[in-house]
Length: 226
Ligand SMILES: [Mg+2]
Figure 1 (tube, protein in one colour):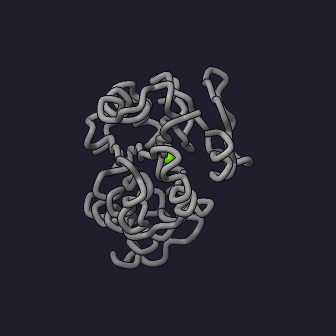
Figure 2 (figure 1 turned 135 degrees about the horizontal axis):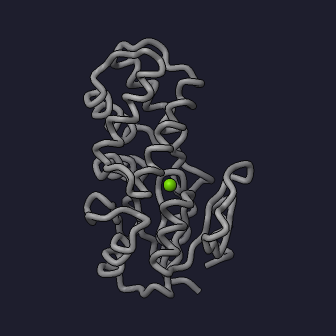
């Protein structure tokens, strides 16, 4: 039915919350900031997620996001540290910790030859490249499309226009699979392509104005959709 899957990476093929946890704790250790507790990690995740949603809505820029998330976080806990330097270290560490969702490496490997598989991601290019290499996914994917390199972010139509300019498949032949309503599913709506929401059953409700063609809570369910 579909000739290609556009995979989101963070939060979809890879478990971003585990990566974030490991990277943040490692940065606290490197910078000598004491212990970063699990509740601090949860608080940072909320702040960070809020900034990414504001970016997707076009309310802030990426350079603002990178620094302001740590200004807010450090401010709440009374931590004094150079936020730009911390962000630089943090991005390096994010690329060093890889965790798969639902055994996704084996899934992507098993789908090779059946469908084309491309990565579509808003993650910073250096961080994403490091994670894809460390995970081995870079050798399994047929193409990697990163917003930083394309000059447009999901969910903009421009992002998808630039992807379709570089792949042989047409819009009717692809499906995007992602965890984000604001970037992946909104992007699919904007670009008029099929979408599959990888959702947390205990998590968010989808807004009524979004078209969601499929929902899965385990990535392996995609095999019966394509
Ligand atoms: Mg994601």
